[in-house]
Image 1 (tube, rainbow, N blue to C red):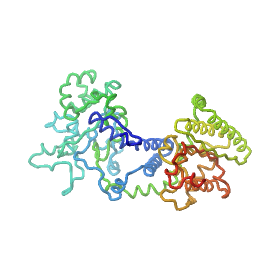
Image 2 (cartoon, rainbow, N blue to C red):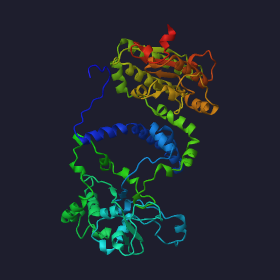
Image 3 (cartoon, one colour):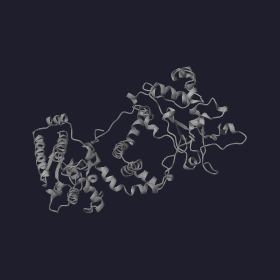
Image 4 (tube, rainbow, N blue to C red):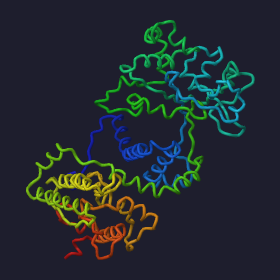
Length: 523
């Protein structure tokens, strides 16, 4: 370890649970950024029609999600992404008034009388209430795990249910009462999932859900109370029965998990945020969560959805830049106090430039650009200077009255994703639509993409590039030409008349970091 002169991420793994949590967190870390993006897109489209909202969220997901090479191959070849030995069933333990129901198909609804209220499909709970008397002692959890409604079973097709036997209908098939149809016994018991209530926050629902899942009942309104005044009283009276049934389907209760020591287990998210699971309930299987393979996906619909997403994705790309606010006065003063004399001089120079820019914008004149390179070792406060310059640009230039809310006037950029994340900015490739791979010369944008980029960056006045030592001379030339293309100016206007603030660490051994550096060409 002493010979390995590089950064190392070491973490103690004390048990199997900690190992699983570490691996799962590492695998899922890229999905956090996707969650933030989808939440932002949904927030922006909340005033539009539902169909448009879904389309925008879907397009953002399809065009921004990162996939591995292995997953890409699996999807292109329509190979199954997962195979499970057991089905998974979600049991809705919400109060009856809060449950989600699925409407019957259009043909069935047209055949109903105008005053008929039976417009919803039969759910798992409906079928449980109409189970035959020979299994009256079976609780809802066991019923959901044992029996399945077989809608589309045909000869020769795979099915999770055992074939019915005419001589023995009680073991492999049951007939529900009141014309609710038949159900087959599963080959293997399914895994049940359900909403987990917080016992301290919602004690009444906690006891009600326990009784609903693990104690036999027929009439939900009457039997769950069982003649008692509260669910808690009934639960304590039949506690032994509930615990015995629960032990078959739950090995570790959330109350037994040491969250401070081990961290939250995967299923504990339903305990912390129970409303999340509600959005996943109910499908055409009426209580079952269907496991569809990739081969069943409608790839043509996905392709149609992506045809018009190029422009939308460009707009989403700059949403964070348009909606970002300047830092608070308290934070601004704190950062300013931490600067040294030279850093403060740079911030004051930029503030004076902002004031001149306001006058130029009000008079309709071009803003005189400036270029600054800030260098220094790590930890000296370069990021503080960037934050102050970014905040001053937003605060002052908006006072001119020439800047619209959707205009991007300053861009925070870096050559790599890690460096861009550290300053809460964008990569240079993403901001200016630069090509990847081997450099083959500057590639102008198509009219459609150029118009979209101009609509977002037409008022751009300042570009901040952190870790500029990793920017090659070819990339810098591409940025120069792209800004000229966006601004629509002649070739003799450097960087399209946009100011450039660049910063980097010590310029030591920079020549080895990229094949064609600025330093090499400036000697």
